[in-house]
Amino acid sequence: MNEVELLRQLARGNEDAFRAVYDCYQGSIYRFVLHMSGNRSTAEEVTQEVFMQLISNIKGYDPAKGPLAAYLFGMARNLTRRSLRQLPREEELAEDDALAPASELDLLAELSQLDLLEHLKKAVLALPGPYREVVVLCDLEEMSYPAAAEVLQCSSGTVASRLHRARAMLKTKLSTRMKSEGCAR
Image (cartoon, rainbow, N blue to C red):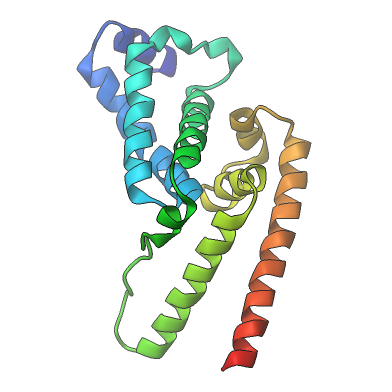
């Protein structure tokens, strides 16, 4: 069933249509919000709210304006921003969302890897919103520049420019952090 027919069925209250849309987009919306907020409960709440808004206002989506994915990510983006304005910054960064080590063969290497991932996570969360958004969409969610441009409602060139600047900022933040830790050790 194509997306337009799926949305027609969803507007009629078809639970299978909702399940199909939810199954298709829930994971990527959750990951996007998690990367943008750094907080699992925020990611869960915003993801749930995105789908609640879709159900309650299915007519708010206009296929002529772009794909459903862009509409859902746009809602997630706005809801995340609203949520972050209400959440103290310390609370965002306090939650540990790192993955558990895959193996216990080399504990020191795993700890170093987890430490590096934590530094990267904090550096991404410290980026200004527009730069964090392009890193999350293009680098973490592996969206193309045109797809990210639709979500962010800007040009592909703007996405490319922001991503280039964001990567430079991350490189500076991480290299400064590593140098200061190298001196401290």
